Image (spheres, rainbow, N blue to C red):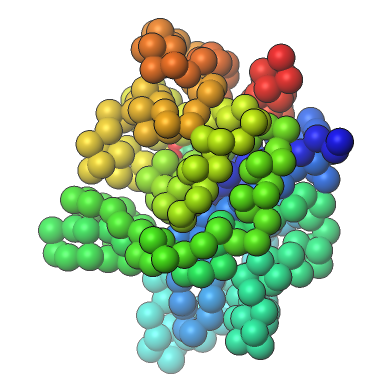
Length: 311
Ligand code: GDP
């Protein structure tokens, strides 16, 4: 039987890990289930930031300095919209806009997000399978002292600087996993949870009924890579969001959150002292270098993960 590694992914951290993964295993043997909780309507266009980040990364098109968007993109349309007085806090590059126009047009023509994602992946030459977690909308919202904000309002417009009291996944309880998601988890040789924000990247995937249950019941081993290193996220607001959910901001907090279905947690060497506490939760620790500072580090982490899953 063909061996398939199924990964659950958010944006920037996942993009680096997945680039490493397809450098050490054939890309056709990787399937990625991607968060859609960050999706937003911008100027009437359906933007799927995590799907785009993962797709661009695997297509070799990602702007690696920014961690999102297309490399060497221009922003002339954005400037034109600003001149017309439209809000431009959500940066969309000109080439990137092509993706959003295509997605919006195809969705309006009755295609599902799964079908559109597949069309974009093929057109950009991505050889791994990419699946949105759900075809129905799941909207991550963040409760601040001033009220509820959409995720992009919190993350991009407010630059994640406001206090967070709670996080919710609007529509998740009535959403279904996209076609192929549960089947992929059940048929996987191994499942990897990328180093992604546990609350706003992995959380919305787990909130779709059936996905957490599939992780618990799959015969495949499930391994997560901690996005928290040395008591803080490598980037982004994961720490504040985990604290808002009452979790310790550490690899141990990640282990507690994923405990119902997690077999192995990869944690950074600088967090080695947490390994016994992780083991005490019934999760096998894998202590390794998890800081993906360059291509070599990305591939080395992927190699350590693949070797552990094969052992
Ligand atoms: P967001 O930026 O918090 O919205 O979340 P994403 O899921 O898109 O990706 C960022 C997550 O990846 C953060 O929680 C980071 O801590 C994590 N991350 C980014 N780079 C690395 C890395 O090199 N190593 C590890 N372990 N985590 C990383």
